[in-house]
Length: 318
Image (cartoon, rainbow, N blue to C red; front, side, top):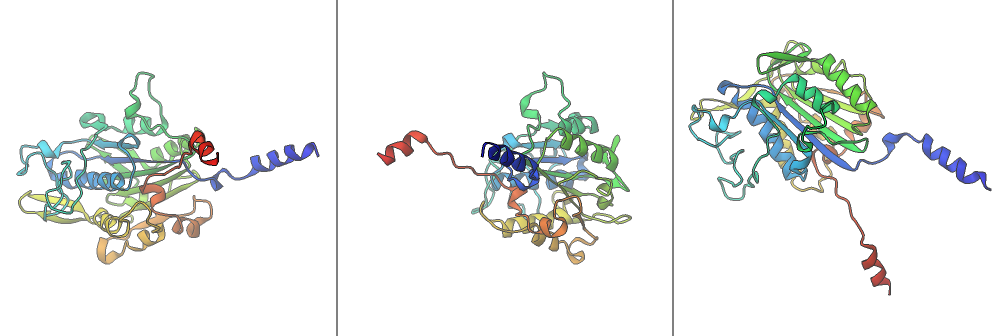
């Protein structure tokens, strides 16, 4: 009988850690392009930022990397504003709505801006290789119970993504960074999303467990913008990101929505995106069926816990 607790402990220790639930959600949202003609890449990123905030992830658990400030660009016909649609119903930079019944952003918090958006800083962020003096607010303070959404957008090619037209990150750089994260117990499950030309070439090199990866276009394919605003003068959003947002805005209208990742991935049709979007399932325990059955909010929403005050509980029992 004395050996029974020991046996039970051994059995529990042998269980796959991936079967446990996660306790926090984080988002890393990265635009890698600067200059006015890349307005849409910043709008892509701010649109995802607005969505994860709307679904409950707080700014303290969002890392936002923007290499340029389109709101204050002298070419901007709407100073202080950024829009992702030619209707200009929602100002992505404002804390208020420009139209009735449209929620505002509540302000934005940019963690890395301008020349801080580099390949080195991005890799350091993922792997937490910072000096002790680096601010906590600019660190990814995750653990092995954290789900992480990583969204990247910019100009890319076969197995690389450009950072500010001055350097590149390769698919192998990303793969090795994710492996370091896994070894250091920095995530539970990771959803990697990328909107760029030849986006799907960025994730075949991944070799670390518990990763879901999806991209906007296959090898030798471009990733296209959705539409331009004639008054802004440039394209304001990319197609793949536009339809991701359309799905998230219409299907996830509450923080308790039960929408699954399979439904999101099925919405990536060629007729909409004008390229062959891709998904990689094999690194995730259970493969494609398990990935498709994952709730979208497991990556895009907050994790809500309930704490019971023992004193109140005891008082109610008296």
